[in-house]
Amino acid sequence: MTEGRRGQGELEAAVLGALCAAPGPVSAAWVRERLGGPAALTTVITILTRLLAKGAVTREKSGRLFLWTPTADEADLAALRMRRILDREADRNAVLARFVNGLTEGDEETLRTLLERTANPDRPA
Image: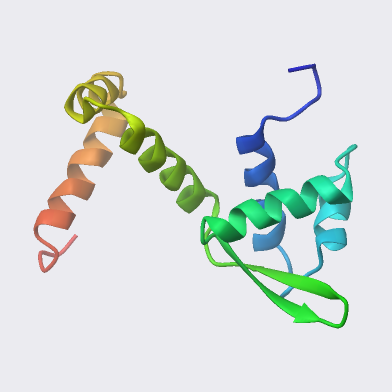
């Protein structure tokens, strides 16, 4: 990848971030303008279509174009990517164990708290 060029995940996050900041449903051209840089309109449409397939955005027809709305935020998109990576692995336990072993102490505590809340949803936070 050349310097200044974004990876697919980064561009998806940037597109989703622009959508989340939008005042309502917006066109792909609106998103492209907010991204700045050299991204072509066709690239933005491709990313929006991928996000649609992932359930991260919706679209509605307005005249000759589509207006796009986020249904997820950047954290949702990152979590989806993590789940998809995990789903492709043969040894999920090993992957999860290595992931947990690589967490910082603060992240580990956050994970423990989240798991506890999931196990006991009626318990106050």
